[in-house]
Image (cartoon, rainbow over all chains, first blue to last red):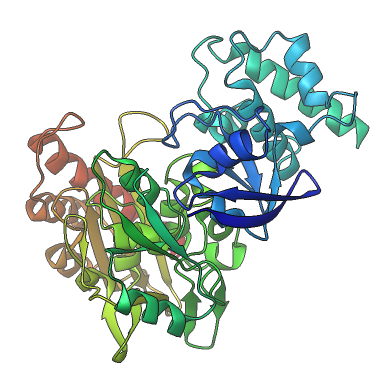
Length: 158
Length: 290
């Protein structure tokens, strides 16, 4: 039996039907059609499916879709402002901080959460905060450069 | 994932009724970072999931004159941001901060860590060292159980069908009290404790230990208290000799297993070292001049 869920995704009221055993990740991709959030491991280890749920950074593969009832969800699709990329997205492109791209949406969502919590992280703080986002291509060096550069630019803009 | 029926009651009474009347195996959902993985296992049985996060108080932490009442479903992310808690129980907050990634901490809770009852759970030794009490509500009323008696085996706790961990309470520590938690993992983050040690001690104005609680984790089927180490500390100032005795007592109390993350010998040794170091940190926090 499917359950009716009313939630808010990236500021828009959204209604969807899902089975109680479906994850939020499944609901986002298959019921709502927001495929920017990626499935990596499906067990909360890799962070590819990172989203914000009521202000907390979570793995959407470890959330039931029905738990989103009455919640606020923010995904990678809500980060750019219309056609204008977010600074973090621009910096990931500028530093070529991606190769295959599966980890990138999760890393960008997590980086935004990091910089909202701590606008001036040290490299070590950034690496620890993002330790739950695995990238098997880049070796992280370019990712961290992009994160630190984005932090600098965002601080100047603030 | 296995089929499930989902309930999100708005009160403890409703939750207890659903749990007590369940025809399927009932599972309490807090952060889900263990439960959802377990339900995804092949051949996981159909279950009835009771999400307790909508129950008022389940995600709050409130101080009274007596101490802290902690909603067991509060996420580690919310818990570790609470400076008022960190200033009183820094070791407990550190234990919560060591669990999983930022994403896992966004969901995982202290109550879930406790009910899941992994031998390697980080917050259980820290709760035991701080004399935390489980407030359990069920069809026949409320009962209280100290955390060290709540966990009864690997993955097992003392909850009967229909019962729910409704709150964790921690008495406000006496002046001169501080805690610390340390664990060993082969990596620098995102791993499971190979051994862990939590210490809470009270020093008087002369630096003499008046009270000590020491709990070790990941070296026995459940986290265990080490009364022999506590006896060595009480009545003494912190010295190399006392610390060596504390370390030996913790090593002696351990009954670990060998697995791919550590051997019996290694775990036994390391839990002693961790206990010694956690004692030092707790003593410094309690104002010892070392």
